[in-house]
Length: 189
Image (cartoon, rainbow, N blue to C red; front, top):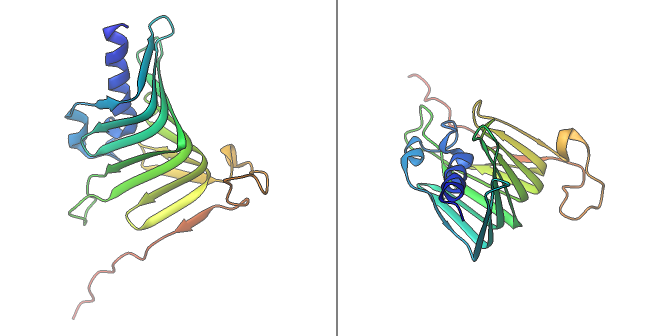
């Protein structure tokens, strides 16, 4: 197994989960080491791919990813892509505080499959997808998180196509959201 492939896999794992996306992860996370534990790891230098299998746990600062399988690929330009699968695969990370907040809130997500793209700083969650931020929560069969713009979208299927009614794990063709009321500024006396 090539040391370069292992290093690339570790770098990707942290980068894909927000180390490069300051909009989502704590800025301090990007300077911390990435640790990955799994029951099995295999690397294919020719295909630029590393596979972690069996109770995979990745940590980097406040970031934590757990999945049954994580496949990491690197393109010719050095950009890295990962697919995490599980029943469900989960991630959790603390965001930097946004004024007037003084403490960052936790961002948590889960889905049967997650695709993490280092090139575009996007995370896509497929099948029984759910994301929580603070007290707010969204659910659908497809969620896109764009770390560069702090944008997200939720649908019942990729590209807004409705999921088949009755499909296991679907939200019956509907997106669900819970949005907590925000504190109002104190009234002037």
